[in-house]
Image 1 (cartoon, one colour):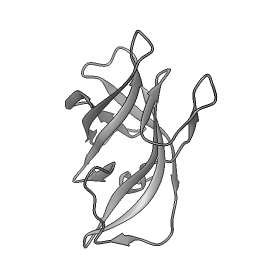
Image 2 (cartoon, one colour; image 1 turned 90 degrees about the vertical axis):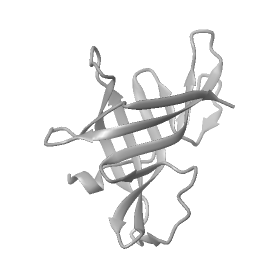
Image 3 (spheres, helix red, strand yellow; image 1 turned 180 degrees about the horizontal axis):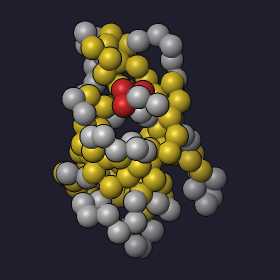
Image 4 (spheres, helix red, strand yellow; image 1 turned 60 degrees about the horizontal axis):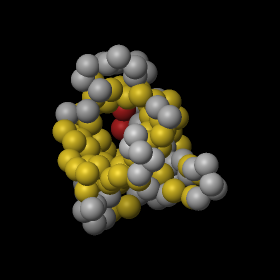
Length: 133
């Protein structure tokens, strides 16, 4: 799988069956329902992605474990503000839902640059914002 074809859409259900459609982290897995992947000329392909937390990594890192193209038609001139985007070798996640130690749903923003020349594809956490409201 090429680096530009790196991300996937997963719909996660929590313990009471409530559907979560945004980026979501649970039990060591980061699920990305829709990630816009830059293809050039201000166009993006839309993917679903699933990344797995790499235990004992420093800095915090995730490996890509699944990816699927959502649409064969590129989205050009897209408004990418507040969307999950992979461009310039960085995965930008403006809103990632996480359950804290008290089972409260908390939202963070994150930047994860691609680690070059690693197989499987790996991203490291370089910046985190939040909790966001």
